[in-house]
Image (tube, rainbow, N blue to C red; front, side, top):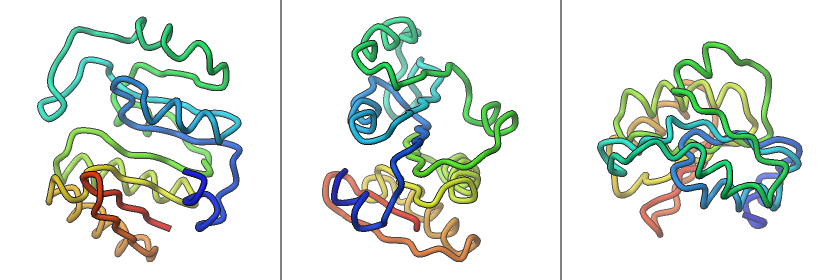
Length: 153
């Protein structure tokens, strides 16, 4: 994370994450950003697997990081109700073209840098990220290791 922050000259005031799941990346971001907002339904999805609602469990799990705020919501509802700018946004939601593109386009328009997970393991995600970059006029960097990490800056 430190290399990405330095390479893309990202301010560390605010981070927004779509797709918290079990909070692994959320807690990493909390070590670098003053505030982290994690948005998720907390019930899984067809790609990550479905599970019982774990929102309360996740709130307890992230308690050691007081700078994390969790929001139980669909990304579509969140982006409809929120504006503003974030220093960085991470998108790791359902791995299809339509949702990745829709969420990613909003994210790229509301942040300096947007990260996308699974650009190599899900070709539809990589296509969506590539289109977001074209439509926003930003650069798309893709790192193929660890299932792929797309960066739009």
